[in-house]
Amino acid sequence: MVIKDERFDKILKRYTLREFENLKQFDAINSESREGIVATEIMQYLTNTSGKASKKEFLQYLIEMDDIIPSEYVTKDFISKTGKPYKKFEFNYSFGRRNLITAGFIKDNRGMLELTEKGHSVDMLNFDYVRDVVSISQEYWKKKAVENKELKSENDRAEEETEEIIIQNEINTEQWREDLKSALLKMSPKKFERFSRLLVKNMGVEIDPEKGVQISNDGGIDGFGYMRADDFRTNRIGIQAKRWQGNVGGVEIRNFIGSLSTNLNQAEYGIFVATSYFNKNAIETAKSSKIPITLINIDDICDLVAKYEIFVKPVTIYELDDFYFNE
Image (cartoon, rainbow, N blue to C red):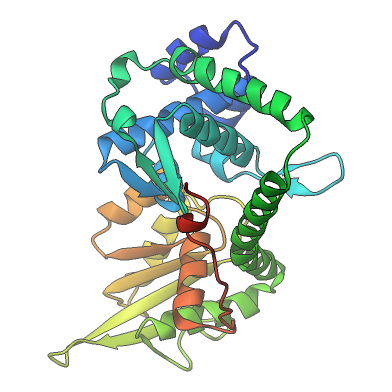
């Protein structure tokens, strides 16, 4: 992807001053500029941490802590011309990540992003995406375009076909998560509440068969349970379930905390389950609460469903290792 907008340098200066206050502002700039900002944030995140992280960890950072890219942009579903939902952020991430790999700053080992030796030596205060990345990746993609026009040998074609199989396998292994997300959003609110109670039950909480289950007089919660420690001390846990597409905010967390502390509930802990994500205000509200609150977003739900095999069946897929492709 080539940066075509001459305003890119100016945009980078703006973004370092944290002037993207909302989704609308960030979405207003062109896709190449957004790509450069996402790629720079990948480098910054890896540099500030251990130099190695999964995509999920990076997304969690953008949603919960980053002040540059609006969290709403990261999670928002836009509607394509064909009427299908898609995330613009995924395109920005894919191109930015690919160009960082091509320029030799990071490597991607089966979903784990990792700084290379070149990446570790970067001074992020002087990092310039156009100069340091695009100038290199641009030449690479031009060369690849020329190569693709030439006839390839049988070995080349066989290697391409094998790579396609690997890529397809990676897509297949993640497709179930997208199917699960779609299915949860189509559930009725009451069914999702039942699902959330089952999820929490698998986490070791004994669910109360009555409290929080009734439509009325539940004290503003969607489930209630008990967790017994090794010393036989029992803690009361309130559950909230939100089948939402938009991010959950601080107001919802405050309301939940209020429900937990009523005379009816008197819970020591709270678990909030949502089919979306929690914005920064929601996370800060949960962290500052006197009652400990555990937030479970849509990615956490998928992880827990896989861990406890809740109405899913594991399928074994074999993936060829690098041995078959390295000289």
